[in-house]
Length: 395
Image (cartoon, rainbow, N blue to C red; front, side, top):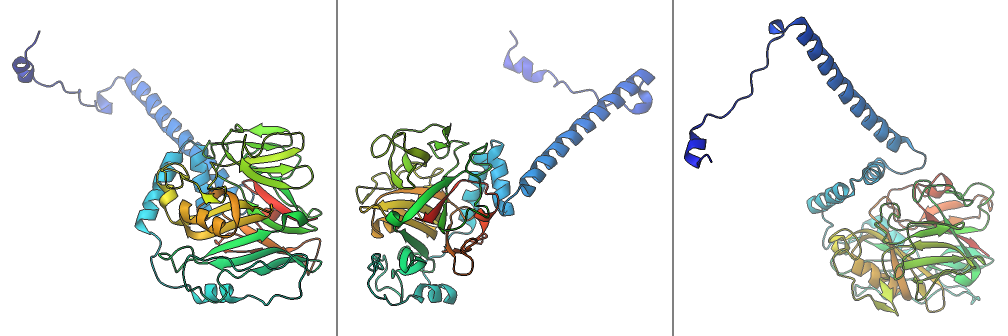
């Protein structure tokens, strides 16, 4: 056995210096040339494959922005943790402002309400409770977004999310479920594959279209912690306990916990699961502040762009999109709007969306309008959609 002193005294072995080309035999020079060319060729192939793969991500159909496409490429190639950390660093470098007031355009949008007309079978809702007192002109006041046969079947309002983030706004939509038909659509990449329902709303299928909203966390990488069902096909696993949008053959929709409030029946045509309910029994969920419950690590505590959907005691639908929301403030907004059960959908700027559709110019091709503009195209679902979404039609 060599003791430490002896080992320390021994000189360290050094790699022999690289021999110069003129010192090599012809056979050695040929072998070195073959190895060098092989390494360079392998590197070129790897770089070419990487470039081709990223190029595919940047040029696939649809209207996703470059940042969203690169993030999707990363998650598709098992780099989800890297993407999440980059989002964490971006948030730390540029956190949302605290305090301040809305920009003039947002103030004008919030105040653009209208007086209630003659009573109808679907009246305008009473003003929504707001987090900041006193409210701004028009804050929490509902206005018609889509009117069919004189009935305001889709209504919307704007509010500031909380006292700290008073320079941001959230948009809230309400849909009369009894006058609407709901359809789950797939995305051509999420969940991907072939369905009878297209990943878009093509011409010829737009008559009566009133609204669309985005899907939830990804099914394919497991971040939704649930499954997706459409056309008799299941992607992922429909998990008991998961928050679920459930679509039925008669065009109705229910929102609840899978295995408790909703389950598979012969009338179910679609299921979209995402995490767990944020509002249950009219109360904000006990786990609303628990790390990992509503996103990667402490994403639930971050004030970022978020979306969620809920159902009222009467069965009507509440949908919220906001600019600077935590999991808690998103849940509280849905609760304030009247949701007794509500679930999270997707987050970050590329994905949350709620569009209403104006059919006054062309009933067969209504004009889409973003309820809250995140910089993405309002007609995103008139082309191939990357991710799944929900379309709402008048009955």
